[in-house]
Length: 459
Ligand code: PMP
Image: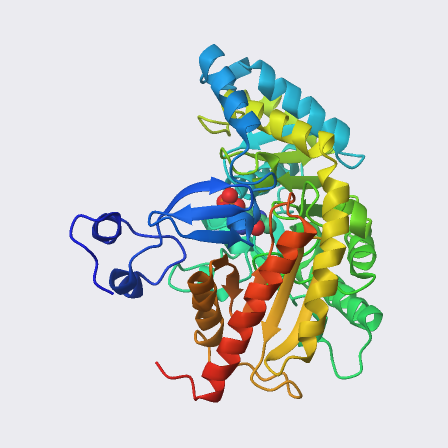
């Protein structure tokens, strides 16, 4: 593709380094520049329409053109465009949102700390837990156990919790305090004939053995996404969460639920913790909190942790952590309006209903020659492509998933390929008719990909 001189594409290639992108390939292909959005659709700078089946990055709950969020932001910008929450300062929308999140979230969460991103939120979780354990006199208890395949962010510490090689390679990660146990994906990691429950037993036993091997007095917390998102949409095996929580409780290991993708209706419940019966000590939220119109994340935690941290701050003189934009009033005002919309329009119940419809429409693809597994809950799903259905053999990396992803763009469909798993995570406002439209486009893309594979995957 030739990039027209001075075009947005050419200037992008000249000046930007993109996240999660092969920079050399990008120099040749250039970007797709999105110019505007409306409902579940976005339009590029040439006016081409795309159905956004990923809600951006798993995040735009109320769609791309919600005027109420624009008005909420504008109102707050006019009143108080910025204030911070350092050294005892505060602002009204930030207090309102903190109270609301504590009121609506699972029992046992009593305090909120705001950050700008999920990565900062998980860094905050680590620092909060380290500070807490220092404050209550157990400075040895610092290790975190996460899962392979999990995603918790990309900063040095949160990126170390992430269990994806692509986020570690070349970065000298993970940090030594961050450990990883087996990915809870039955299709890939269960033994032949092992039931979901037996697989969950084995994973809980592995976690317990790992805690004992490390020394329970050194293990501070276990962190997981209730349903793994960015690692390829991996619902845990049945009974997994009740079993791993019991192990954590036995060894006084905190349970951290990272609901950055799962939260606010994605699985058809307000929080995925409700869906899986998780009672976390710490809950991490972001993305659909503001529909990503503005950056905002929140760490909710128990009173026990708060009391330890408050004592520690008193002893040391401060809780020396926070960001210039922690609890930014415009972001929190937008979150309040976004939550109003989710509640008034019944979008959680809607996601349960349309989600069940989407799952039912996707399941038949399991019999397609290229598909190994179709999985998901509510309005999040993954379709894993395999070279051999019987042996579950994978394709050579970096070919088939990206090819199908590219076919999607051709046909006006934005999906995501995590390896060879095609992910779907449309906005919560999506209708059944729009699911039909999405599935019809996907079906064409899948058949075209199968034909390309059949032809020997020409470059
Ligand atoms: N946790 C989870 C579960 C996520 O999916 C993500 C982002 N995809 C993050 C944390 C990191 O969030 P951010 O990109 O805002 O730093």
